[in-house]
Image: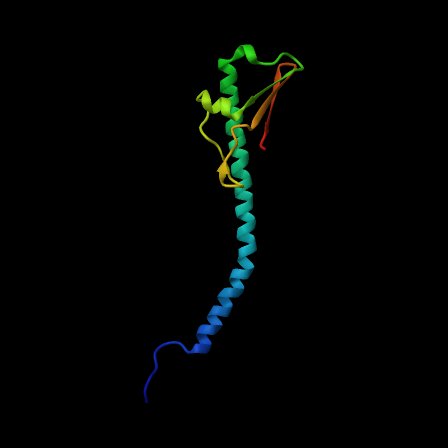
Length: 118
């Protein structure tokens, strides 16, 4: 009697169906984690922009707003001044616009920073 080595077509189809079901279960979870990762990466970029803004403030003391006032600068100004490199928007996979505004607000010598991504 001849012994066949290998899998039958039914066995291969069963494995493919099983792998497909596992992929259907896992894919939404992977996509969810990827979206959260992109969001976290953008938050890190915003923190980097704020850190660069603080360095800019150290060199531009005359432009720091008085109590109760705000000052606005752009990402392009930070890039041109050498305070930060080009910044990527991880949700769109494109460079962040140089027109992105950073607002510095002085509240009783406590500074608030807001980054408005267009």
